[in-house]
Length: 92
Image: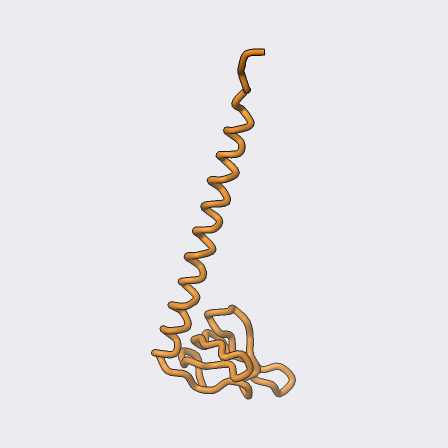
């Protein structure tokens, strides 16, 4: 495998495009773009572009959900802050 190839980490099924390769103490390591982690190349299998697209679409879906949750959290925090500024009034 070379830089630009798609690879799947056999232990977890992680799929990515190889963006860098380095050797350290007779072990070849490949950097996958989807995780920004190096994997022992002996534990990588070739993957297809379809595998890569499926994995990145799944990851983008998760990122979208996390962004939505963060936006809702922020909206709730702003609403709570506004509610604290309202002073109760009433007869009494």
